[in-house]
Amino acid sequence: MKDQRGMSLIELMVAVVIGLIGCVVIFQMYSVAEARKRSISSGSDMDIAGRLALMTLERDLQLAGYGYAVAAAPTATLAGPALGCSVVAYDSARPAPDFSFPFAPVVITDGAAGAPDSIAVLKGNSDFLAIGKVVDNGTATTTRVKADTGGRTGVRRGDVVIQVFKVTPPLPNPPVHDCGMFEITGDANADQLTLDHATGAYSDASGNARTARYNKAGGIAFALGGESRLYSLGSAPARSVWTVVNNRLVVSNDLAWADANPADGQNDQVEAADLIINLQAQYGIDTDGNGIVDAWTSTAPAEWTMVLAVRFALLTRSSQWERTRLYETTGLNPPAPRWSGTGDGGGPLDDAPFIMTNVDGTADDDPADTINNWRHYRYNVFEAVVPLRNTLLGRQL
Image 1 (cartoon, helix red, strand yellow):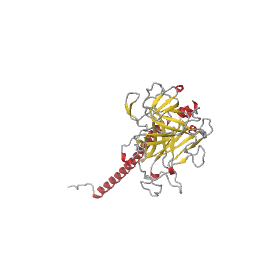
Image 2 (image 1 turned 60 degrees about the horizontal axis):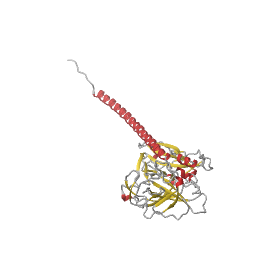
Image 3 (image 1 turned 90 degrees about the vertical axis):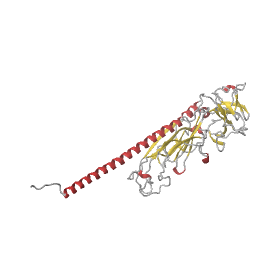
């Protein structure tokens, strides 16, 4: 009988070792591929979020000043442009109904120590290209406009209007004005010149039942003299306030207060895009009146008609932690993403770095390679320069 031969124990052990090595290689390749897939996927999400945020904010800025562009032009009655006055306003839906805001297309609030800026965009939605109507008489609940500026044509029940008052002479330079905001509740007076802005219920121009929310009982007092001008913002004006909260670009309407959580006393914010960690913005200023932007600044101008454009930058961060550092520390100055904002050189072509923080928002003090270290994430910067076309149009009228 011949000897029966098979695989020895040594051969089996060699086969097992080879198989294990193959498994290790396969799983290692799979791990690397999966990590790269997550990086690519998170980078794509970051890119989509940034482009969406850029488009949304840019589109809103393009509407800045809609409905009151003519307020940028000097008038005989106001002895200077109306933009820049402080609007005294009332909104019964707000926790503190008395409030105010600048009568300006765009207001930038600079974030402290590199924190995100906020951008407030004021725009109307009137169907009419109404000029600034001259007001020659009024009471706490009525306003009468002159016939030579079209009477009350272009102003309808339900419209929110801003009335700009001339300061009693002597006027400073640049001129200073004061403004009031109220809601038109009636336009049926026989003289075809008087507009009502009373409290209580009324029907708007479309026949919808409404209750005046922007009219204060007894009216708003102004210790000013001279004629004034009236600008209609339509029935649904907006003062969109854009900022970054908890790595999201959010927006709220300062003229349509809504608070789903009354306990916090805050206007509700709507998320426009996620993965946004910073927003920086600057005014484009025409300092010599030649119609060309020659300076960029985050400081509010002395004269709002000098603001011809706004530039802003959004910084996005991927959600995927990378094993290796993508931004290495060099001494005390780690490289950080940059944008076109004016840097230390002060020139128009200088750029400036974003001030980076730990992922949890605290100061950049994490030297270890932890999930809190911002250098282990990917970033992208999205920028745009937006001409304020309504202001540019108003300067020509």
